[in-house]
Image 1 (cartoon, rainbow, N blue to C red):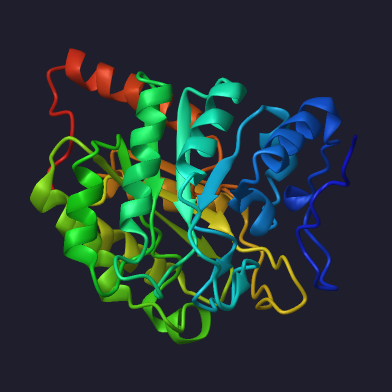
Image 2 (image 1 turned 90 degrees about the vertical axis):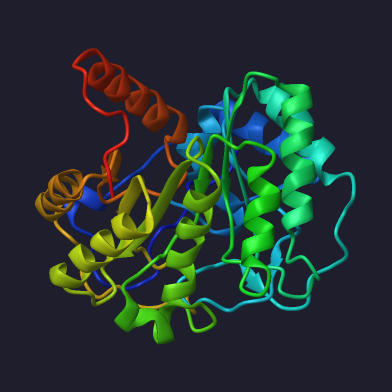
Length: 313
């Protein structure tokens, strides 16, 4: 069984050489896809039409998307369907755990659609999924990528932190001036607040965020977001190129040169981020395990040098 490679740009604009990526799915990708379908699971890799999907599936990894595949919000950069979600499936956490165990995952990333229709906005389902994963894989590294929980943020963060995720991720996605166009139902200040909530309750869980570039932002605005994230307590950041994944998506304003991504990476480290991934194909959960391993190596070197493990905000 095989599938075509993900189409990453529907615009007629010609892609620069650094954004040309062609990976044959291969047998491992097909087996990963078949397992996920057999268990009735969704991934942001598939629903979000990620350009790295086939590469990840070929490596027998995926980012699980819980709470269905229909989102209550309509972000104009995202390919996930918007509408009225179906009833939450109570056994989904166990199916996620079965898939993670079958794939032999050592680092599991769990994200979700927005569920503004639920009383707890889906926080309880995150909790059940983390518990199922810990029961099935006691030594697994757990990373959550959550919505902003706009009505229940404080209680949602508290509930999820009680399960001791290793990394708590929430993406700001873009610069404040573009929110109305890119994240019309989001709020930049609320997204920053989630990191303050985490830092106020836990010093052990690593905090992480991501943003896209190429939507019309200036470099100064990107630097401003990085400064805001550090001030809020974020320790890890990912910066990647926005690519239009559907005909209804926003047009790409700029294909950012790799040298600019390197500049963002350098400046982010200078600001005190503990780890930074910055590049055209970087996505929030792409190579998450490898990034975490690199982070651990960096922290070990810092410990050996007698430096503080986490840089002060």
